[in-house]
Each structure stands twice: as C-alpha cells, then as structure tokens.
Image (cartoon, rainbow, N blue to C red):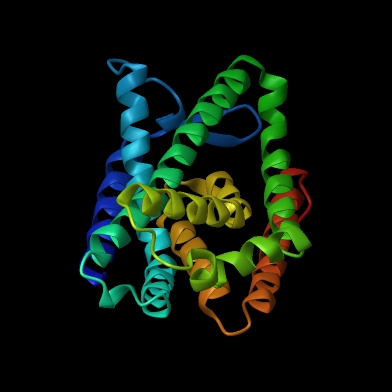
Length: 249
C-alpha cells in the first residue's frame, strides 16, 4: 500500500500545482475565488470537469488511503481473505468500489461548485455574503462532529471487519461491498471535506490537516473522542472566520 499512497500523494501535489497555476479572481466582499470553478478561455466544460475530477481522485487517494488501507488489511485478516487463492483480486474490487463512490462525489462537488460560482459572479450582494457563509459552513461542519449521526457513521468506518464480513465470491459483489463502505465513509467525512472545500481545496496545508483528522478519528483507540476534539478545533476555526468576515478582531 505504501507505493500506492506515495503515488497518490505525488499525483495530488502535481495536480494541485497545475490547478493552482490557474489563479484566482477577486470578488466583492474581499475574497478571491479560484478559477477552478469557472470555464476559462480556451477550455471546454468537459475538459474543465475532467481536470477537476482527475485532481479530486488523486487528492482523495492521498487523503483516504492512510485510513482506508489499514482497515482493508484488518478486514482481510479478520475474514481470512489471505487464505483464499482469489482473495486479492476481489479485495482490489472492494477498493475500486470504494474509490468509485469518491469519484462520484467529486462530480457532484464540481457541479455544485460551478453552479454556486456562476451565481455569485452575477450577484455582488451574494458575493459579499460569502465570507460569512464560509465561516458558517466550517462552524456547522465542526458541530456535526458532535452528533449521533456522525458517531454512527464513524462507528461503521472504524468497524471495517464487521461491515465487510466474508469476502464475496465474485468481483461484482466485492465491488458493491466496497461501494457501500465508501458511501458510509463519504458521509462520515462530509463535514471535514466541506471544510476543506471552503477553506481552500488548493491549499496543501488544509489538505494535510484534513487528512490527519480523518486518519486520527478512524484509527485512534478512542475514535469518538478524537472526532469531538477535531470538531472543537473546527468550530473554533469557523468562529474565527465569521469574526473576521464581520470585522471583529
């Protein structure tokens, strides 16, 4: 798994570097919007979408693998997959199903992001409200960490062997199992991912912080407590963003 993780990190950094070169547009309200959410001159919507989804997949590989790989390994050992001759091709199908869910999430994120970008570019009043709205999103993402809904999603992600059970007998069934697990973990990481999108999807420091938060809450012995600690930090960050947006501090 280490070579895959290294390749994912390298690809994510390369994609982020190329996408960061696209620049930003100053917007009413004193903030800047990355042109990743717009179709720049000479680019088609299909090309822009493909670039974003490629970057998203590389970034999610680097972010999710540190927590997903150990869980897949524990699942393989718990279910006795390693004693089966055809286990690892089916385990790869599990990983493919998991990755598909995140790729689909990237398509949805891009569609929503470009739609919102189009709206704020045409409405200066809404654009001026974006800094406060961004702080509110981060604050809400932090509060989500304390909810029972989050605790249930996290429990499933942490109990990977229990969620997987026996390895399915076909690649298709293994793929569907991975997709179900990916959906649970995508929901579990929704708040953290939203925070990353708001703070700056092109920011390597933000990406590293979210990656660490995801890994800690899924792998630490006291996962629920870790999730709440992460939530406290995010709530504080959201309050700071709102205070700055309204001119306090």
